[in-house]
Length: 124
Image (cartoon, rainbow, N blue to C red):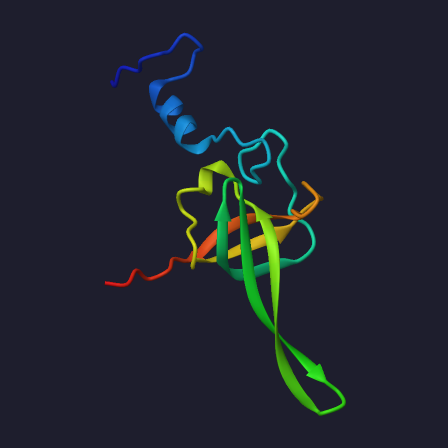
């Protein structure tokens, strides 16, 4: 029979280690935060073009039909998104990420990073 070490709060060391890995201090984290942001509305995928502390800017292209000329044109859209503390080391400029729409967090930020789809290949 395996002996379990109990901490003062009644939690085992194994559960404390799991909790330390999973939890983050960001209250606006959609996964672990105390004020969990509910992802509602549209979900976007785009490339990270700028990374700041707690925020990223993504850019993606879309096709718009021009009825006058019966052709399509490409347009680019930039969106600012909240970057949770637990994902700060995972996201870099050039990565393809997925963001979801939430309630307004600030004047510019209305989205939050959900996951990293593809990392940028490093040039050798």
